[in-house]
Amino acid sequence: MKALLREIESIARRAGAAIMEVYESAEGMEVEYKDDNSPLTLADQQANAVIVAGLADLEPRLPVLSEESEQPGFDLRRLWRRYWLVDPLDGTREFVKRNGEFTVNIALVSDGVTELGVVHVPVSGVSYLGGAGHGAFRQEAGAGPTPMQAGDTSGNSPLRMVASRSHLDQHVKRVLRRLEAEFGSVEMVNMGSSLKICLLAEGKADIYPRLAPTCEWDTAAAHAVLAAAGGEVFDTNFRPLRYNKGEDLRNPHFIAVADTKPDWQALLAPVLPAD
Image 1 (cartoon, rainbow, N blue to C red):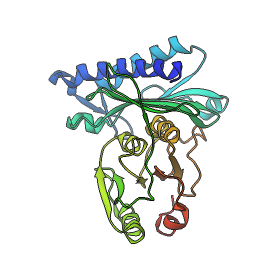
Image 2 (image 1 turned 30 degrees about the vertical axis):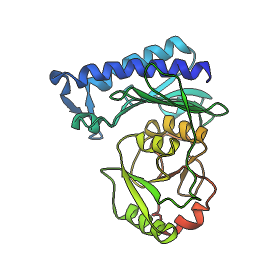
Image 3 (image 1 turned 135 degrees about the horizontal axis):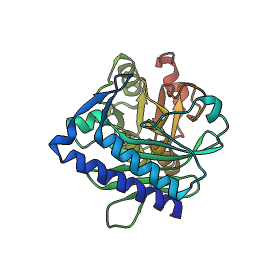
């Protein structure tokens, strides 16, 4: 496994420890709300400080774009060839609910493509790592990395579709009905944060349609892991998601798949909403 991935995982793990200090303290669970009405906690801020400092020590010349830091305008970002894209605590709502389904996301983006990514799960201590040309791995605290391979939809098992606990809307239900017509049985898997994409990379799910708002820092790290495991994250025109694409840091609607061999575009395009 590439040394740089190990270094990123170490930073993510330290950020996860900072998050758990707050998670286990009743006094630390106070919630503020940002201008976009998204929640912010002390854990978000402390994890961000750990990550920004760690990445500065690791690659001091590379800029960091984090959800919890001031985001430069595109007039500056358009000059970035490589940069870090960070969500210090992905799934703050899950954090506040104390259900354990939140992560630390760190990605290295190169020319709009996720080159490397680490998704760390503070509650379980598990990390998901991946990079182009280096493969994808699952790593538990104190253990060596285990290679991961995304699933294959050609078998006889039910298709497994991941859905957000908060976003099973009419559009996703239309996708579900289309998949049931094509594959027969479809098993639903509910999960929070970027863990949904990691389930695909781990071979525990097959498809994740996200037809609701997300931002680039929500997906970049898990996208790198999934791509390294053999899957992909497509927009609704079935082109791989790209990053630092403009002033707006929101993603288009997307479909994450573990198996890229089926013609997902022919199957799903008729039921997908306009982005």
